[in-house]
Length: 312
Length: 110
Image (cartoon, rainbow over all chains, first blue to last red; front, side):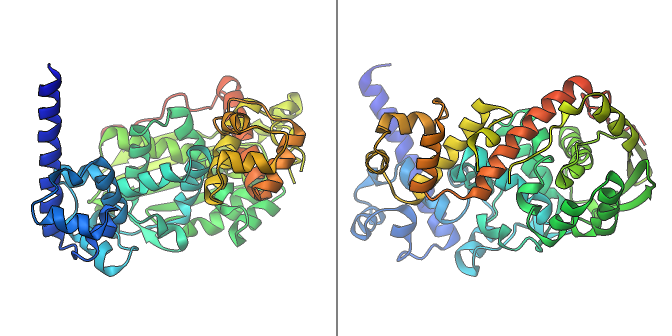
């Protein structure tokens, strides 16, 4: 392809992109006095472009700026796949507005995923975690109150999106292990921190599981040597969820690591449970059997598996 | 707080996460490589850039200087240290624990 053809093709793409932005602005009703700020351009340049002059004004940089301004992924502007209600709510009703699929059946507290965002910020930077939040069409500010509730759909989408954005399975597995990042200094975190034994740790979980989520009906059978956790998920309460196999597997795998790594909050080494999943009409049951004795024996045989933490 | 305690589990991984935090904090303070280098006499701008990308090991003295100059939060540093411990523990458990979920159990047909 010649240089002239390349230039023509680029010019055509930019023109299309600019037209998409124009339609988008009209569609969502972005006030023209806020548009220059949203696009990151001077008012005079914007007016010139809006009037049909300066057609080259809108490039990728302006598109990204517009996406950030509205907390949405810029690709959705070009492809027209944005959620108009959500965008207008962000634009006019403040930033803490959830898309429909996250605002129905809100059975999860945001504290159950706050550590994931902190993990992303620490390991990949604020820009990365903000980008993930934009792609989910939620404000990066939603974690300002971890008592807010959200649908299980959100967490499943989050895991899926992280997998699409470069997190390996090992990193996804790490997510459930880093609860301490968000829970550490909270009242609940301190309860776990004060636990001296596995029994105490899982007892605190049993007493406080409702502070994480109520997507599942939980039952605990706990004694000094083992803990059996049964979690029933009723389809009737979650008809809005996309039950694609890969998504469900990621969720269940996360939950196994979550159960295993809770003792780490009490500076005890993790215990991987034995797991069993059964499905009956309309209900999925997930059982985790945590045997504390196995961990005790391992620690005696090989104490270096979990060296004591002396960080503070 | 001792650097040796923070990076005892995986120094390279610690440096990677530490570099990310350094960069965030430098940008938050609106500080260029040159400006930061001026504050820390013993480090040139290239060294800071390498530290931010996790590609240069840091000495205790450099760690202390960066902590002071960039007003690093001790709790964040502890968290970064624990993240590397988590990673190391996962590696150990993956190899040694019979219940480590190499494969996720799947939902059987109802």
